[in-house]
Length: 239
Length: 219
Image (cartoon, rainbow over all chains, first blue to last red; front, side):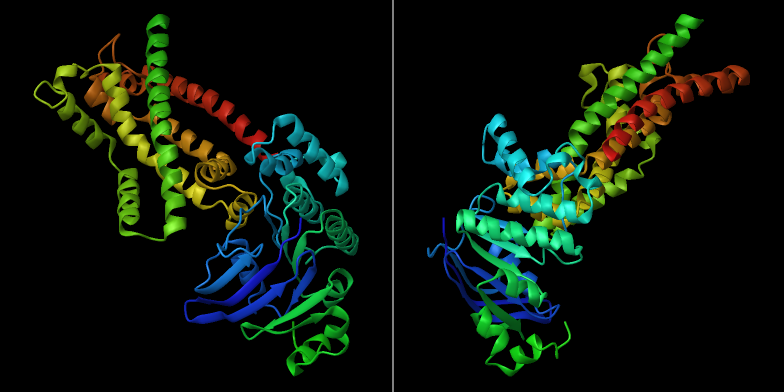
């Protein structure tokens, strides 16, 4: 159930603005890697490129060590965005959506979806219209919807930004539980340094269009090698 | 008198409902494909031209549509052999011409306004091609229903095209709007107003059903 992720020389510009300028990143199979950096440095863009939702101008994304670049979204790669985007259906139908696309029969899809909702503390909300849920509940729903497909690579984009501490805690525990259960490779983008420390095994600092530094979280936060990383983790750089 | 009135109202409903159904079958997929193609491939010239045609036809005067269909269906016209002039089918054809661009345009706007985040969510869960299109249209279903409602509203209240193509023949092609025109020209204003009120009641009944559907979707 594990998968390595390798990003090589990825560049991306939007018009005149160059966002990513040769990103190299390697995430080990089955590790939780936190990508940190100030707002607007291209963390989300990089994640979208890895997910295949955005095309890079240059460079390669290798998932699972194969050279063909792309594996199937949904089945192999899960993606949860910063802003919960729910479908105008019931909570249960939201979670069952991906299963149905994969051709899972109705009974099993419903059973799996209910179990996934239950794991996220949403058992009582299964028949609720998804757009009536609170922001925290909606984000937990999106997490359940992505993980019910058991992706080997899970991409999380600032999934706890703007949530209350209770929901943050719930989601972080869910990330760890999913990791323990599946040994999936997880790449989490966050600008919450405490979260990166709590959840990830390694962290990388994206700045100036490149990964400035990547290391095991202990060393990353206590003894950063690069001056810019040091300034960022010490809170001397606005984010 | 009552029988005649009910016949006229029934034909109004039949013509408006049929043309709305056909226009929806054509316009909803067309509007959705236009919106999704534009998003996927950017503003290509062919898409821009298609959009320009749709939005220009939005404002097509019904009498012009009526005239075109009249010429098409008249004895010397290319479809003259079908003998559809002065028939309800001919009237439906004219109304389809008028309301298809409207249904297409409103559907286009509804589908285009489905957020990128929702489309990305569907893609990230494995949707692509037609399953992605179907998901996006389903997400835009309230807007699509509005497209159908606007189309029906235009059809049931339309007079110029059905008058030219249908000919307002008693017991055959007379609908509520053309009956109002006739009674007004005869100076029977009370009858004309009565027919108008009846038309409004029918329209209100239809929209009540559609509104209920919409509200169920919103709550």
